[in-house]
Image 1 (cartoon, helix red, strand yellow):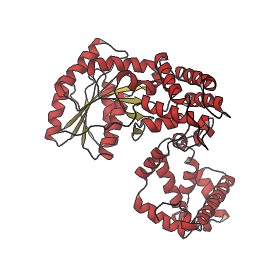
Image 2 (cartoon, one colour; image 1 turned 60 degrees about the vertical axis):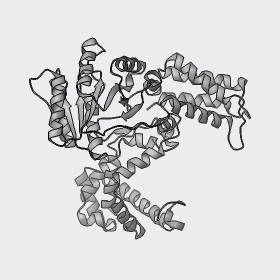
Image 3 (spheres, rainbow, N blue to C red; image 1 turned 120 degrees about the vertical axis):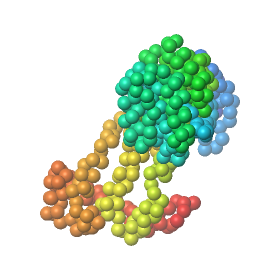
Image 4 (cartoon, rainbow, N blue to C red; image 1 turned 135 degrees about the vertical axis):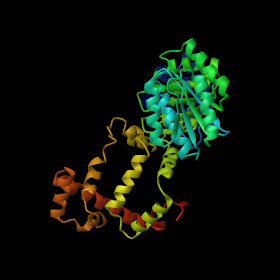
Length: 440
């Protein structure tokens, strides 16, 4: 995500290396490189020029305090300006009402229906809501079927009327159905087109007028760059939507849409989405995105993802086992499965400061743990609970059951032993391996 932009910005900051102070002379090339990096990321030239002028005005003449280099100071200024450009701070999503009505709009292929499923998952599992999804795309049977499949995965109801070609009537009937069946959020998936046209705009405007939505979310494919910004402006002129959703951020996105859509339409980005899994939907935080663009990672989001997956009671049990040096293969398998639920492995590692750059050219497959899981699943319950009981004959059987060589099984056992030794060493450290301020 934003790899090209990150690398070019990092290169631009190198112009200030070794300087004692920022001035007009030594900042000129840096500003020029930052502007070029933004334009290459598909940021409108006018916006890129305005952005870099603000950065220059803030930077010129600033004294560099001890332990802070001009390059570091410039990074901080650019970080603040990027954060402001993308909205400054996260904006609340309004899902309150009786019922709350969420209208989803966007072009065909933008990921609108997939986002509707993800939003249902977010509403149900993170906000404790009881959502009803509405299939208001009456032109594509596949869209109705897709919504049904996604709803089934989340465990929520879909309202549709086979044969009815009036999306306004369907939306109004769905709200009546929600009230009668204690559904407190109605999410309406509207029809899209391959390009902005009058028929689509009239239809979605008519639905808006009929249902008076609490939120109108415009879904945009972030891979389309500046075209996405132009499309957002066209929709906003007609719908006056309340927020933007950026999809496909895991693709080869240059970043132009994420950086400038708030500036162009003056509406906040409320969610970002990556991948097809229903739990890959995140609230958009401008400051965290700015940090990631500048290669600083996003440790806050990483911790939040971990907290969402790890059960506190189970974590305490695991801590006791580690203290007694009783960590076994079943514990290891459970932790692997929890990590996998957090999302794309490479994306997660990119949230760790300094790691994103180091692994940019490394191919990290989400199936990297499959072989390890196969080996553990080939063990008996006794073997999982007693790692030291694995005799050569048992290892041979495990290798055969997992479709692995004996050497691969031995390598995994060695790595597991090394990990246990490290856990033991940390447990013997002052405060049990904790950093100051961490709870016991």
